[in-house]
Image 1 (cartoon, rainbow, N blue to C red):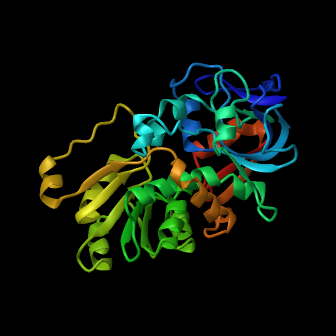
Image 2 (image 1 turned 90 degrees about the vertical axis):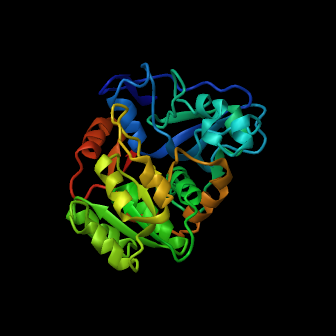
Image 3 (image 1 turned 120 degrees about the vertical axis):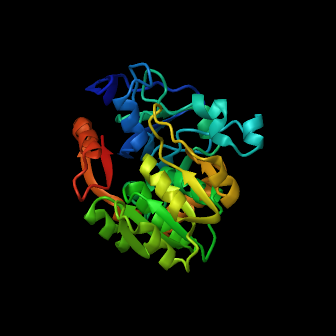
Length: 348
């Protein structure tokens, strides 16, 4: 089969690799579409993982083969694939910190080499642990593979929304109106809160308004805190979701978040970046800082419900489609987006 193999930093090789062989409890999925995620781009661009590997994890496809001991799945079924499932027994899992679980981190779907998601290939193997514990999600007949590929990123965003305890009637500032920021806006609106967005691109500011933000501003606007105050009765927002890895955005969040509010880090910052914070700002204003990484097993069914019942319009996030052989060009576009670049989907 064809696959895009990571051979080193910024080195993707479109090449022939063996179709994965199955153990008795495993399932083989033919990949129909896979989303290009910022975490994939980070893994390709920086020396974080030893090559060779095949990345890609926002996967939807058709079951092509099942192991002899697999009972609940059959060839031809359409499925969304979750690439990680926690053990549900360790101390992290018992505290609902599923993404910290060693099993969650180390057992993944694979198209060969070290298991790393494997969606950037024609076929991906789903390990028995994932098959047996809810990692395959049936796609309803009226839902496209494209829509189904959003179940995993929806879960990740939903986890952050739940962790920040966003509630009806609250106001939420979302920094960055890329595909993740836009999904946050849709979810915030779905749960009854008001979204305010910032971005640097006029097209993305307009897009934020189109997907449901109540207001959207240029992130460089020196009057932003005053405008936020005006929209919130002088209070500031209840929650800020940082969807861009920017220290400027963090300090802006401090200026715009009300006393007793929350700031959640969703984007991953460069390791070399440090942000100096006077702890008295947090102490006196009772600001909660928190982070949210990856997905939550507890939210898997809700994420599927939101996508499959079209409670948010994930199709509105899609801007570009590339064949698998052009993955390098897709990555380049994501790194240097055009004004109309949002979610990029890849087709083996």
